[in-house]
Image (cartoon, rainbow, N blue to C red):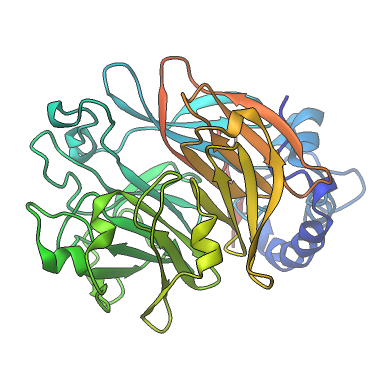
Length: 395
């Protein structure tokens, strides 16, 4: 069984934080009528004690403790999520639970938008057309893709909440696009550059921001001032429209480079709060040699896909620091970071290398991907609640 993302034995600081936050939240919980979680203690006190244990321990002891993991106000228990395609280019979203070591298929959205996405086209024989997805505030957002007519496939974002297993719509994009730069920071979703129905210099320089908020997912018609895309300061040029770019959010800024891979590139930085653009530091862009992701928006990790080396950026010294070298990192295609783990899909997509970067030295293990599926996107999000476990009543 793979170690859990929330193994508190490797993150004592998170355990302390969980105790403080949990103490406040559990006062509102009214557990359902059943046997006490811990004999001799009221359940709200028991929950404080159990929150300090790794979810893998709770899962393996008994059903009542296993159920605690899925309480809405329990510290988030994380899973891997993949956006993948099979041999027929059918899209599928799947979740891997590191506690039970099982893959589960995520229910598809109740809309035809996702079926419009084309992954293979005669004009691009040697490559898969990208579909861009983000992790924002514990939810998965599908943002951009391409149709068989080489048009934008998604007129508005599709949002999946893992806890409720409910899909909803984001606000309509003023200009639906594909091959854009997309990222999030501090719950703000940013779309920059890209292609619309045809190439447009104005769209290639444009920037749109959506301040994401957790709302009633059944209210798909919400159109108030906070549920719209806002036009932001334009780019100096349209150099980001060459690729589908992952903009990495860290400490209120979005970092992005204009091309993927280990080739020479240019980098830009967008400040979400000040709506300003600047050039990426030379040392940072020089070491940006593969897919990158930020851990809790605090530290940026990148994989050198040629050398198979995982590095993190030291913004004080302005240098990339080696974390580890492993053959599975060569040809890295996708990366995600969260819960003290960095997860990487290597070339060929045969497996997902999970690196516990909190441990010293880092621990490694491999999660096998679904047979016959190629991973197109990788995310770390809250675990989906099985049907047999119901959330407690919040009063």
